[in-house]
Length: 387
Image (cartoon, one colour):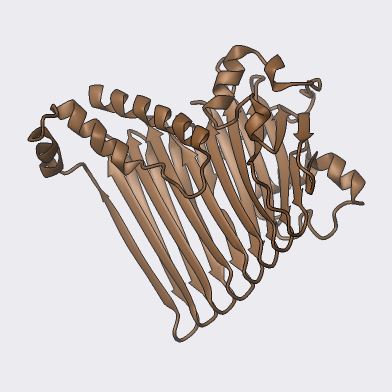
């Protein structure tokens, strides 16, 4: 029996009414969404999708060549999506994928047609509002040949909600010469259990840049997204920034499988514990030559807390080039003294170092989203400096 006890959560009966605008949401929910990177002002976005509790409530695309639907609607429209629905994700992987297979509430389906360069980001939000809600979504992203898109997905809960579980299955298909930038920002609550299960395939010359950010408490997060670079010259990069406050248990990492010649992979993670427990994993497996991969895992302990760094390299062919760097430690006293010598007090010096460690200058983030994340990190570092 899993310690999550799936039966504690409601996976049916909480379908919400459709809305005509994100502006119709109450102010507090809008603020929670904003802190997950989702803006009710759609003027700077090519499409918007909102899944609330057990169903999609809002879907709008303003760009030709870009289709966004509730996954259930996409399954009806495309005769079950036999080439994409549960094609690379395994419903028998664990009890959470099995639950998602049995209980499909929706999720987002994004399809970018061949050659389309989507200028403004797509934004989607997976939001939980009811107490003890169990949310089960299946997301599918298809970027056709030579297309380019940036998707920002925010996951969040309403402030009054006490307990909940989110199960999210995501399948990514990046076709020949296509480029997908995918940014996910988690803004959960202290009593929320989160189980994302993601997998993607990148074809010849395709690129996938994946950004993951979580700065707020969560009860339990477990995820290990996997990308298969199956086409010659495919590239990918994982960037992650995570913070584990007291009471949070995070087991997160990334896995990349290099199955073709001239492929390249990077995994870069920055983790801070301020009292929580973290397992930070990474695996690059090389099966074809020439191919290259680099894994960099850095952890910072502020006060109490535990970080387990688990970097893995697996070479299966002569000539593979794989490397890694891993470190876990505290803020060096000489760094604090250096900044204090230049006029900062100890609190200011500490917060400045934290700010630099959690650098959000991630490739491809829209300016407005970068500003939002900067605000979140400023709030975090001031809290830590005052602790």
